[in-house]
Length: 127
Image (cartoon, rainbow, N blue to C red; front, top):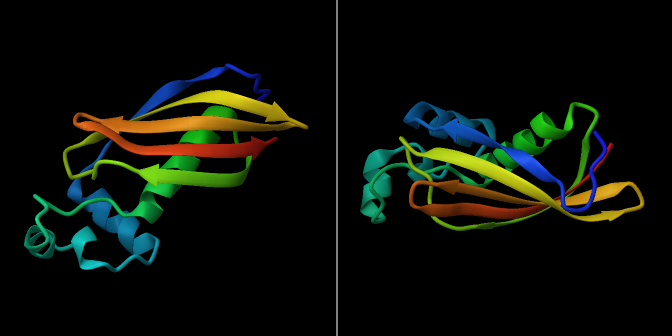
């Protein structure tokens, strides 16, 4: 896919349940108890388990490659977490191309749920 400055990527909405949150934490080898044990999450002031940063990063990658195609290569990702994502949340990704240089495009990606922004990222890709 050829990306041009100002292109807007379509939204991708992903619903999350406890199983997905726990499975993605385990898959990324993040065994921090707040990602799989509701009691431990509650001890730390959270209403439930919440998604790990590694899983969030993986879902950003999925969004970009789903939209841009399987030949897309992710060259760089920088992200900043916002509000936690809990079971029952739906994470909606949107993106906009903010820079194109020498065949590489940088996409500003935002992932939001019902309470606000979960993650803001900049993803540089090439095809």
